[in-house]
Length: 438
Length: 167
Image (tube, rainbow over all chains, first blue to last red; front, side, top):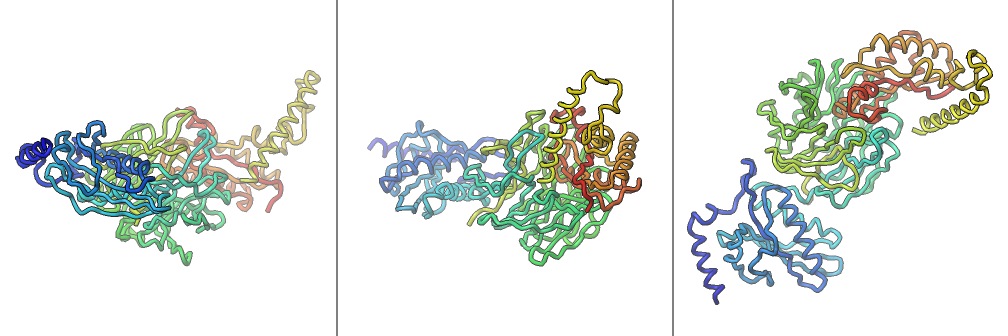
């Protein structure tokens, strides 16, 4: 009775604008969130007897996804006043307001053989209302982490108004061994470093894998013939084939066009490196640059009309943009230092790059015309940015200095906040972030 | 890759032999190099170890440069003479970069360096058909410290003898 009264009182107080957030629950990502939004995710309720453990695990993954963005802060269960024991029971908003939980995620899970059924709801505590409708997700128990990521994706999208990136995978190069004898193999993992699967052995050096827009195929460079050349690999079957094996030439830095039918890459012949495109089905190649300088690291704009690449035609490594068919290129980088590995954002608004300046390496972003350059990181060696599918987070590789130098993956958001390591079983480099999975 | 591994093993065997042999000859005639001649060792002017150690199998480059230095030209002159004398061998010229650069750029830079060495050897009369170029970019440093002393030795082209039979 008392609880009821109190909750009513708090509900009334909640209606006073100075007490709660103004308007509906919302985070504007672009403004660079200073104060993360507090939320609570109680363990998901078990609707079948074997659902307890997985209910806890699911809640942990959802919480990790949200806190990992730097936009949210989880309230520990020890702070909870009321327990959620029935998925359909009314929410005691006052109890959640009292601990300043602005968002509340509740869920229930049932396990039926190898099938997992999850229901969840998202509440805007201070408005005292559900944010969006409750959803049910059905999947396999093996793929339980994906189901948790799906919940996180929905929560993130509803609160930020942006598409999310949790149910996505990243292909990268897994590294072991000393610097002078690194062993490298291709691997694919969930965006958070879980579920690593190796796609190649480490007999030959493999470099810079790139996922296609469906997350089904990988382009990469391998030394398996003794010389670097580009390969196409199917993620599911891990079958691979060579795309380019002209004698006396080396090919590298491949990347898919948005249509998935074309690959753009570098070919080195007689010491000169230029950019080519190739139709994957026919093998028909077209030369896009012909200069005596180095032209490499090409990346398409999301609409497929333009290519950004690096060239040292001016005397130092800089970024240029040209039409997807080749031709005249215009320089877009003009700051101090050298610029490389440009990658067009999936939103088309920014280009991420690696910059070397005064003995340090940076990951940075600039607008498509080179304006508003912003450096997001600085270290002895940061390299090779890749975009989250929503264009809000960048993953890259960082190598530490010296004889025992080790390479590992990090992520940072485009405001330069929330730098954090991505945990992988071995060292990692050359990440390529795939699409949000269907 | 297989070729390279077996080649290294041959080297190891040779150097072991050389080591045992020189112990045996120790003290007999230290001043007369000619009497220390061991076929297949660095004292054999037709051997691969001789090419590597006496002629010099590598040339070094300045930061971000692929232009040959005067020292580099002298080494390559020696390589050219050796290759013109020992015509049964084919070579792969490897190009390398130090770690201070992005991966793709360093691959392209290594290719430039290797080709610079190749072109110079061609200009000195070595048949182009006997040579292939290969860039490792920054993937295979020989020195692992993160200082200029190491970087300088990693910015290199290495002429690797791949076989004793042409073609």
